[in-house]
Image (cartoon, rainbow over all chains, first blue to last red; front, side, top):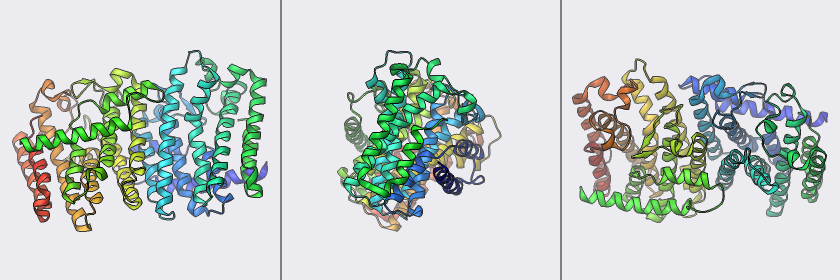
Length: 292
Length: 292
């Protein structure tokens, strides 16, 4: 889908410029913290969550000017969670997006602090966004904080599940919190900034929830079917860590069926939005068919 | 000062009840995360920052009902910073408030996550406080986020200063960020919630800034003059870590003079507020004369 590639490239330009403006390469001390933050923030991420936010926002007529700060905040919060999840006491990962993880490059203390700073900054960016009404900002801060708390819950549950018997309910609980909450927030935030009504926000929220699940299912499949080089992060980690995944519970074929059903659910949710949701449909299509 | 003891006891009751309501002992999984958070949150802290916030708020006629959520949020943010600062890769401390630090008791991963969750919750609590006008909430979130980012900056500078030649300017920069920012926020937040005007907020802000410095100076003195048992945390850490402190740069006697001057500056700042600021004066007096 060349059209969607263009869209992702456009989002990456927009968000990178915004992040570079928010956290410039040079500025107040300590430089080490700045470098650690920027190492992870400009690590070649796809900006999937900002893209989702911007696509949802544009569907309701929001200008990029109103969307870009919250989109940058989402990327900051996501990046903080990656930095902390990669730490030795957590998932202990040396590789992320094809290069060293933050703690491998800058040491553990700086990595923890870089994550901590990014979480604080994500709330500050939204609170200070004068392009948005005060009511909108406080709604976004509240929802983002809830998503941030859920991400922590998901990570803790995930760590506790390693090497244990895990049910499908357990896995869904983990993913709904660990990755689902912020993906759903991203879709909702776009709709809220665009002034969507309650029914429309509900539709987008349902879509975001399914998209989050779909993202995780395809992530699990990729972990099994792709190499480390193709992924840019350590492949086969789930199996090595004896982690329960959709494929480990269902088998690969049945997991593909689940992905296809989840994809259809996502499309059903935004059916009532008609043509406005064309980009959101393309994103769903992209996820279900992604290879890396 | 028996009167101030009563005030601190009152604040501790108010804040503990609020925190217990916000993060109850039983609730959604994972219990381990809940236990880790509560271990540190109910670890016998003095609730100095909430007390400062409530004293400043009452000076401007704010009800406890309007103050207590933000006061709880400040305690949450402070607790998160203690948990992360104690980690092995940071200050590597086993003892806090007379008992095991969070990571000693629950492991590093849970301690990192407990801190992460507390940071998110501190913003959520303010954003959801319907007792406050939306404009007030967003102002508080923005200021709290800035203070949170400064705490990270201060901790990073502090870690980098260990074992190095450190100037007085360096030390002041560290403390203004690491401990000063949240103490100043606490005083400011009370004034803002109480509807103080710009001049009054400036006066309280100056007071808070001096109180923060005074707190650090007396902390440095206590680290040298008191035992671990008396402090409830490891004493002599600064010397052991070859950390630059006010006493190490100035000597103990000259540091006491500095404390006395800083105390007077704090009182001068709130002079114009007259009798309303009586409790804030008592707090300044308490800090300059504290023994543990």
